[in-house]
Length: 248
Image 1 (cartoon, helix red, strand yellow):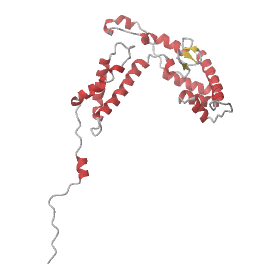
Image 2: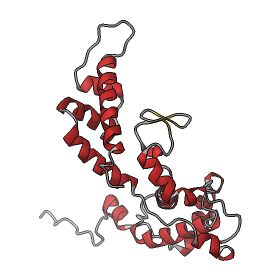
Image 3: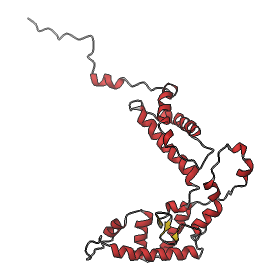
Image 4: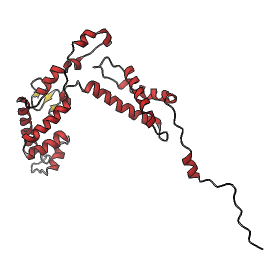
């Protein structure tokens, strides 16, 4: 008997994995997700304590966050959970709001390597106008920093118009100071300065990078070397600031 040809299957067998890939998760619209967005935003209400800017309450912040999420909506991947994506945008945007609306007015000591606890300063003993950076901030931004307005801006136009409008870019000044110190410090001092004040490493990390040792009992390796170099650096920074060699 002649062997019959294999019977063709009229229906092609489907690959389960291929079928799974073809089934894309439907992306929800911004409007469909607004309830979840509001829930995630409202979770931050208790943590919003930027009272120095009374003209920006959490209701204003909420609206800014919604607009920002709406603008980013096309970047959302529906294959991933929505809540973590929303939270990441909220966190980043709140950081931006704080930096842009408060950080620009904050005293420079908050970002200064010489700052110590309880308003103390490693260079000038106290965080005060004795320091040229602090004095410039006090002259140009302290009014805005200290503002505690209980009502809207519309009801106090005169007070707002008379407030100081000076500008002090602390980060730009820091870059200029770093460049200046590079020409002032010795090679070893600059290396330590760079590790401590630009890369923000701890003194112990710097000691290891510099291969400093110690023979003293119960002392961290490099303690004395780092302390002496740091003292020399601080004295030279103070001289540069006192001479007005940095344009504030």
